[in-house]
Length: 156
Image 1: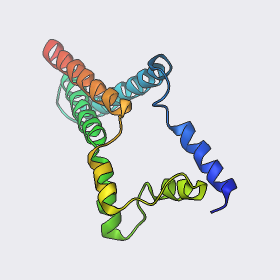
Image 2: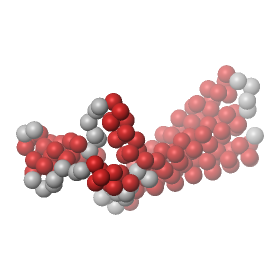
Image 3: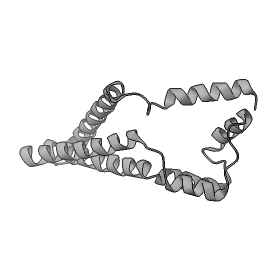
Image 4: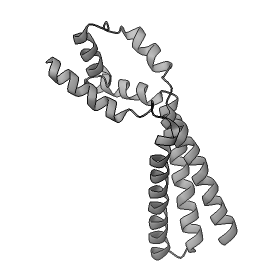
């Protein structure tokens, strides 16, 4: 791998990694994602209302609750490191490269890192790095569930 390509890969990864940004810079993006998700839930709930005999409040409320549960599961899995282990297991099963293998190759080219042994990879997967995005996914899931319950309880 050429050093020029390695630099380009690092800059792309830096653009995607916003964990170092302060919360005030990340919060508008999180709020936008929350709003888009809420709008999508309302749209799906409206479709369910139109094709069934369920009330509008129930269809929208239960759709929002379901979306909140999905957010809770996604945030818990990524925050607990389970997605890293799952990706590694799928790669081993199907013979693909590990997700972090490209990062390891870049670091090896720069001479700053040695190749991880299988035990080190397992320890890294079992002790994931801090993931503020996962925390906000779980918090968003709780907010969706609360909103869905409010809609179902008050308007159904």
